[in-house]
Amino acid sequence: MAKNMIIKIAASACASPIKRLKWFQIESLRPFKNTMTPVSYTASPCKYCSDLRLMAVSTVAVWAKPAVPQKVNSKWDRFSRNAPDAYQMINTLKILGVEPQAIEQPLDMSVPENKMMLAIYLTAPEIENDRRALNTFYGMRRARKEGRWVSQAPIGYVNKHDERGKKYIGIDEEQGEIMKWAFEELSKGMFPSEQIFREAVKKGLNCKKNNFLYAIRNPVYCGRILIVKYKDEDAHTVKGQHEAIIPESLFYDVQDILDGKKRLMKVKIHSPDHLPLRGFIRCSKCSRTLCGSASKGRKSYYHYYHCSSACGCRYKAEEVNDVFTDELKNYCIDDRFSELFSKVIIDAYYSEHSSKRDNRSELLNEINALNDKVGKARELLLNGDIDAADYKAIKTMSEGRIIVLEAKLAELADNNQNQRRILDIEPLITGAIFTLTRLNVIFSQSNTCEKRELIGSMYPQKFTFEDIQHRTGFVNDLYSFIYLINSQLGDKKRRASDRKTCLPTLAPEAGLEPATL
Image (cartoon, rainbow, N blue to C red; front, side, top):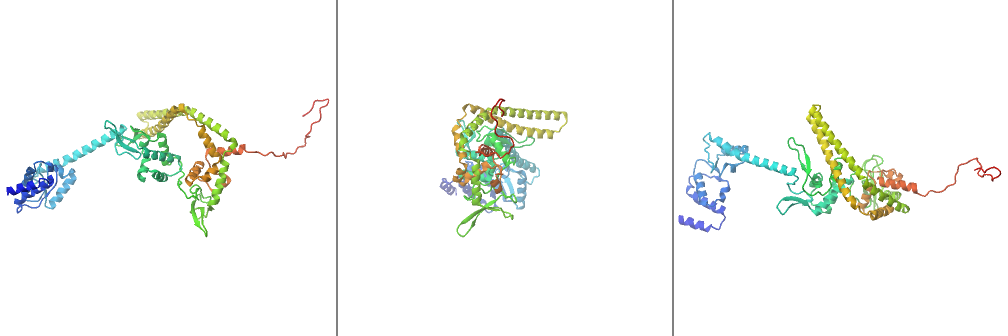
């Protein structure tokens, strides 16, 4: 018998340790096959034990008892690390006639005093798990307060590590540029976030819709880390150690648009070629936004702008497009005054940069006023005039406003540093003036997306077809000034005066008396 076992062990030497352990256990338990009942065994760290014979002997010592079936574990923390779940499973096994047992921590469950030891064995692993989870939570929160990003990098960033092995997030050039473009488009307030997301995907953004909507709310893109609310500590942001993709002022402008503090036009980026004005025109009867569609005729399709309600408002698309193109002529700069426009814009540009110091002082004054407001609220709290909840609300609101003002102040500081190397804007102004002198021609030669961008830049609000015909639509300040200048500087015809007078038109010749006028 011993010789056969040696041969079998030698034959299975090339097998895995788990298979050898299973075979050895079967061979060791074979003499007890007539007296023992079926049992189950849970794998534990003991399977890595090098002395397989010792483990088999210890297993036989437990399994050889033919009293009741047993669920054997190496230790009680291998049975469960949750005390309530463990007690529930023990009761379930008892109903099924199975007694759980541990090899290294054996307990005789027939002795009532052993239930205290069982409680300790089952509760200790749960306490250890809770302590580890709490330490991990506090460690991650402390790292966030230090300005470190502790999870997977958001879209536009990648996880990196320096030469010392310290991990950080760096900007992904391709994805970061797309996210920067998305924030800039959102700040314009022309198109909804869903439309911008679709365009970003076409540009190569590797992101789902829900992740994108969450990303544009994440302050990590402006270089700040969000600290969520926990117990008595309110939610706030801290300066991050990573590089920002966008400035803070741009991020807060986008948040104002998403929160509804700034008006959003909500039109689609794309539209059929024959319907470039779809989404910009309102119904003159019910104020709804006009839709656009094509109607099939005998020979071809005919496009219309129409209302979706029962009011019956309907316009031919070709007629509306022609009227709008003709209307653009009124906002074109006259070639005779293009040089004058260039000089005025250049002077305004330099005066704008020189006046930013005044804006800096205004921001500083507002920040100081908010700090004084918090200080007065603190005094009122100490005097008992207000309660802690009111003081907390005043402080939270003031600190949030101070963060926004400090972001604008930092942007002004960067602009002042760049003021020493102001770009030569004369070529840019020349190109822009040339575009404005032939605005209607460029509109006719552009594709649909470019046409809609031009319409959105001219009209911050939706308009009706009658507004186009009578020039009563609300346009951007730039185009309104151009229209005003063109109307005042246009050619004036010389007309004969139709005012009648009874006074003589000829004075008498000079005589002895002085001549009269």
